[in-house]
Image (cartoon, rainbow, N blue to C red):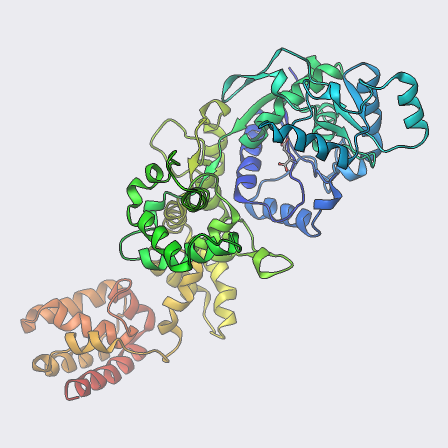
Amino acid sequence: MSKPRVRFAPSPTGALHIGGLRTALYNYLFARKTGGAFILRIEDTDQTRYVPGAEDYILEALEWTGLTLDESPNVGGDCGPYRQSERKEMYGQFGHRLVENGWAYYAFDTEEELEAKRNEIEASGGTFSYNVKTRSSLRNSLTLSDAEVRDLLDSGAEFTIRLKCPADEIVYVEDIIRGRVEFQSDLLDDKVMLKSDGMPTYHLANVVDDYHMKITHVIRGEEWLPSTAHHVLLYRALGWEDKMPQFAHLPLILKPAPSSYINKKNVDVMTDKFTSEFFKKHPDYTFKNKDQVRQSIRGFLLDVNELSNRLQIKPKDKEDKIIIKEFLKSTLFGKLSKRDGDRLGFPVFPLEWNGANSDDSFTGFREVGFNPDALLNFLVFLGWNPGTDQEIFNMDELIDAFSLERIGKSGARFDYGKAKWFNQQYLINGNDEEMAEVLRPMFASKGWDVGDGEIVKVAGLFKERVDFLNQIPEKATFFFSDDFDYDEKNARKKWKSQHAEKNYALIDVLDTTSDFSPENLEKIIKGYIESEGLGFGDVMAPLRIAVSGVGGGPSLFEILSLLGREKTVERVKKGYAVFEALQSV
Ligand code: GLU
């Protein structure tokens, strides 16, 4: 059997959402697991939605996360070009072939004609769709005579080519994740295949390319499932049924549970946020004044655990209540959107994106400080599970454990706390030398001249105390600069004048200690405390504040050892004088 070939086929319409990155990851894992090829195809036929920089963004995100491509616009390959805009010429013939073999038709309806039809159908309570029922009353090559069609074509009249969905048939796909999914053909719309400018739509280009690129498995988001009915028909219509790939539609990534970020304490802040969003979305809203809307939103948010029930629309609800409920429903539930990141203060894009304005500019997981492997480890669990308790996987283990069959059908809830947890695990288990490499430029930009050994030690000391590596320089400032403040409140509490003399005497002990290793310091200091009959807190707390400014942090003995004798003694002397003085103010 030939090797699997899978493709990641993003449209360069803006920054790649993490849902897109997850699709890329699953394709990558499947390809690596099966010894197949992982292909990038840029689907840029819709020039109106093309955003400059988006393709570079996609490439950079894949590179940062290490999802290496076997074939792509840059890498090349036997099935190129890999950018649809460079394949334009080939799509037209397939559009026309569909018409010739009776699977599609020319539609000449103008915008106005379609609008009139839509109004007519909506007036009698229906919704308009160009389909098996309506096409017989519209202006197309099925209703016009051959001569009329020829005349129109000869005269250069604008037309589209629409797929002629069959009547009264169950179209189905055997989805690897969902099993058999059926579609009633009468309900399918006759989708446009070729637009009036001769450009293909997504559907035609996508199927033509999957066929020519010998794609064996289409692994993509659930939002494409409805289109799959048309794709199945297209394979049939073009005579490629025996080459149709297998489909696997991935579950949606859902917004975080509202109860994970709305609580009694922050309900007013959240209410203000939602109220201002509501008015942004409904600038012409006139039913109630702002304060009434605010009260209503607050009422819903207060009962956060019952929220999804309370937002169900009831027959007796008035129009204004429905508008508020609809707004909250779409803002709080459903698919994770790029706005959620802004609203809740976390990234939903792998890398930062600077769009044309601030509304289209977002931070990225990279910029927040995530390790790319940790991000992938987090993402892989949004829809897949290994069937065991193991959560931390390196790439080789993931490739080994991955299978499409273990991807679930139901939506996976995004949980930023969990993303941070993964990053912490990568820090805790990470290699100090490698982390030091990442820290080095951060330290350099602060103007600190830090030796190699010191950076490695600092990385080791702090890695369990931060969510992200980039939080270490700030936390470790006291190692490299004397310019830090004391936590005065804490110092006042911890410095006890009755022990001042004994604490000062410890300075002399430290000053005459030549072995400043953490182990020896621990022995000396603890020995001193015990022999003087003091409590650990009486001595170690002021010592810690004197050398680092704060009451918490890594092991005190490690800190002192790294600072060295001279610095330790200097800081302790200075600190104790300040603490003593604080007692008298
Ligand atoms: N261009 C589509 C997208 O942007 C590809 C969907 C598919 O994989 O077929 O997601």
